[in-house]
Image (cartoon, rainbow, N blue to C red; front, top):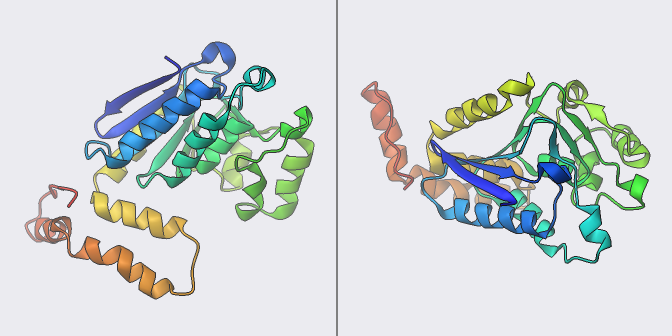
Length: 247
């Protein structure tokens, strides 16, 4: 299968499984990611999502250029990327190796990123006469414009330490520890109230609008009125771990 899915203690691990093709994004991979995320969004047994690549060298080499050149419909790839951005639950990228072009755009759409110390990043689309339209051109919203322009106009790659320095990723660990580190990060998130986690992600991700205070109240009111909120306060008072219901 092009995409493998496994629930590991509330963390849904979604693995791009095309190591023979650099874990590149073809229609089957895009559809597999989209299906997994659509299910995860409403599945109460899923609290976080971890996206990774099969093998130890390549996270994702981007769009499958052979499929693109053959005229295959790449719409499912765009749909998979869209759902990565819109998923209401936290998404962690476990970058086990090279993440370039569409692979780097997958990383950019994740909420948190754990990378192997040998990982490489970049948007080399211009080297193939293409544009990093899946999110790469939004880099100036994340890092200084001059740095983003250098990346986009040269197409050169950069290492995990540079990505950490720029604030594009959260952690750099030895390659063998990438998945364990991602699962540990997911466990820290999963220990918290799911409604509160999702509301926090939503408000942090959304652009500030004219009625910011009213919008914040609308998003947070159901959280404060939830059973989980009462459980959290009660568990604190009783000095025990809370038992979340997600409602």
